[in-house]
Each structure stands twice: as structure tokens, then as C-alpha cells.
Image (cartoon, rainbow, N blue to C red; front, side, top):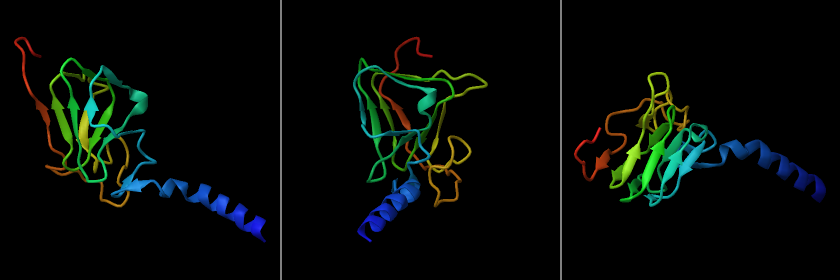
Length: 144
């Protein structure tokens, strides 16, 4: 009897696993990359295979801080989804050069159209104010 109970428990764990990794109604099984650190202090590249990138945490929001001398490069086609009170403060560089057919998209975590459904218990309709902003701390002459 104990052996059957253990086997049943293991089977149920595998069957229910896709539904057990959520935080504040965010379906992490749909997200390719969850950003858990709010600091980028060295050159970093977010690649298309890692998309969408989900930026949020337990308390709802997270500001990604790109330090001076650090570069965050975001490849064409990457989708960056931001939760409430989330955004970027750029003191270094953010390079997000998309193309017409493969744009870099910054959007709400509520957006089901871009990057898939990351919030299965919500309506999937992004709203103005769902996330904060991209703050650029300085602009140099010749900035594009």
C-alpha cells in the first residue's frame, strides 16, 4: 500500500508541476527567462532563445539598474515583459536594436499577444501604467 501511495504521489507531482510554479498569478511555466536580479553590473546579452524575459518579484515590482560601464544588449525579436512597478534605470548602456520584422518589444506582463500568456488568471489586456518606465540617467552628445 505504501509503495502505491508513493508512486501515485510521484505521478501527481509530474502531472501538476505545470500549475505549481506561480507567483502573484504569474505563470512561470510559460516564461523562458525570469529576471531575479535587479542589478546589471557587467556586460549582459538577452538572447532570442531566452525570450520572453519576465521582470517582476514577490512584492510586485523591480527596477533593473544598469550600472555605469555595463551594457545590456537585447537581441532582435526579444520580448521584455514588465510587472507592476517594474522598469529600468540606465546609467550604462541599453542596446535594443530590433528590425522591422523582428522588433524588440517592451510590454506589460498582462500582454498575451507578445511573448505568450504569462498571467493565465488575468484577461490578457495590457493597460497604460501596468509598468513604470525606462529611465535614462544621462544622454551623451551624439546619442541615437
